[in-house]
Length: 323
Image (cartoon, rainbow, N blue to C red; front, side):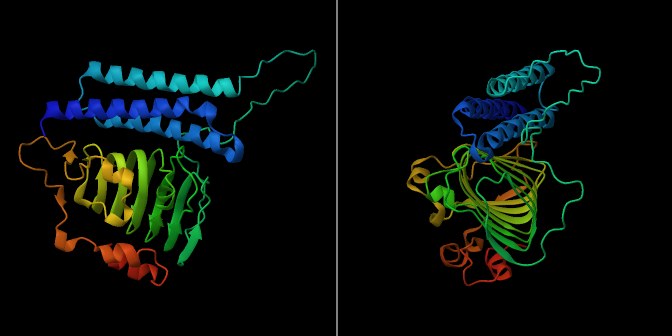
């Protein structure tokens, strides 16, 4: 992929991400405040803006200074728009001075929207070391810090949600139920995952994958972005060209039929039109391959063994070639 093509690809993806964030920000006013749903949606917008900033930084070696300033100004305007919308929900308090000797004003903190990513305790509880199956709360912002767990989501609508799945070891995470209920995620973030199977279901926007290794990912999305990952098999349906950078040992295959929906079937699929963002040579990138058909997980495994009702977690992971 030539440098000019990389710049064009980055331009296209950047503006698609901006358009997605603008829609998310504009929808905040109609998002319910119950159960912290609006606060979570604001967190998702903050995370998306933060991701855009990192994308521009990662591409700085390819972008002229003028383009970098233009992208940064666009991100700044997004942040200002989000701040304006947030203030319309909860206008800043007006302070007035009173004739009192000791009048201490403590700053207010709005819960749940202080940062782009969910905060973690200073000393996290060690992850569980036993096999468990759970129905995770659909409003949870992050499915994090688990080991040897089988996690599923109930079919609750998630159309405005952009969850984060992070810090997992030797786990199975199945998020496909909302897709079957016709409620895809707005976006999805996968971070710091090792030796696991992640089934995302349908993502209406972008899936961002960072620091994943020795794992299998099954996803249908509009945009696929992967950073700093290695030895990952990706079963993919993407309506735009998948992009990765700073990765190695990736293998791509089409989405298994069991996870396809009529909507997915009707959309374009560019699962095999993959761009290595930092590979500028004429020959194909050595950092990814198409997964040979003989090595792909069979339909029987996806249909019968992945639900895991009669299988141990270890056996299921072996069945999908988690290394």
